[in-house]
Image (cartoon, rainbow, N blue to C red; front, side):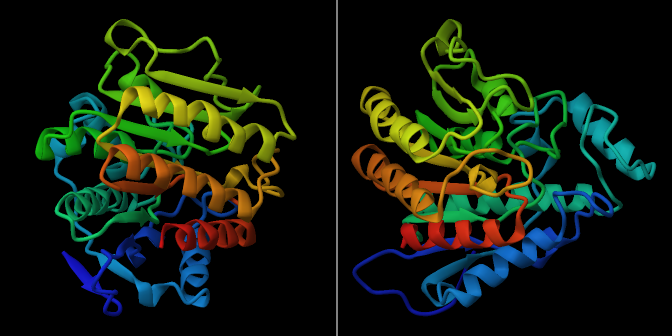
Length: 323
C-alpha cells in the first residue's frame, strides 16, 4: 500500500501523499483551466519544497463500480461510461469536459483516495493529502458538473463508514466555489457534517446560509457565502470560531478537507484573497479538530486552484502544515 520516500521518525506516524502521473492523463482540452499542468505544478511544489522525503506514497488503483455507487447512481455511472466511450468532449449531464482517458483517471482518483482512507484508518499514516484530478466536489449523485466526474470526498466518507465502521465524518470545503455535490449527497443524512466557505454570488449558485440540512441532516450543513474580496478575516474566522464550535458538538470520527486553492489571491476563477499562510492556518485548525475528536485522522483532497503558481505555493503551505 505505502512506499516510503524516507524513514519517518519512529515516534510519529508519517503523513501520506497520493500523487501519481496517471492524474495528468485527464485532458479536458486546450485552454481549459483544469489542465494537466496542474499535476506538474503540484508535483514540483512538493519536490522543490523538500517535503517529498518526509512523506509516504500511496499506491493508485481503480475504484470498482460498487465503490462509485456508494454515492452515484448506476444510471449516471453508465452515462459517464457511454459518453466517454463515444468520444464526447463534454459529459451529457453538464459542464465537465472529458477526454479519452478521463474515465480511467477518475476511477483511479477515487481508488487512490480509498487506498488513502485505508492507510489512515490502519494507522499507517496520521493524515494525508490526495493530489487528485479531476476534482470532485461539484459532482452530484446523478450529475457530473463543474469539471467534476465522481465526487472523491463524498465517496471517501461513505467508504470510511461502510468499510471501517466510522460513525460520523466532518467535511470542510475551502474552495472558492460551493461544494454543491457534496452538500446534496449528505443534506438529509445526519452522519456527515458539511461546511463550506465560498464566494457568493458565484458558480454554482448554491450554498446560501439558510441551507442547513433537512430531516436527519438538519443542522449538519454549515454554509458561509462571502462576497468577492473576502479573505483571512472571514474565512479563517469562520473555521476558527464557527466550525470548531460545530465540531465540538458533532464530534466527528474522521475529518476530510476539500482543499481548493482557487480561494487564493490571484486565482483566475475566484475573487477571494487568501494567502499561503492562511492555508497553513486553516490546515492547523482542521488538525486541531481531528486531534480533539478523530484520533488525528484527517485526509485532504485537491479540488480547485487554477493559477499554477498559486496552486503550487498553496499546496506546499498546506502539506508543510500537515507534517
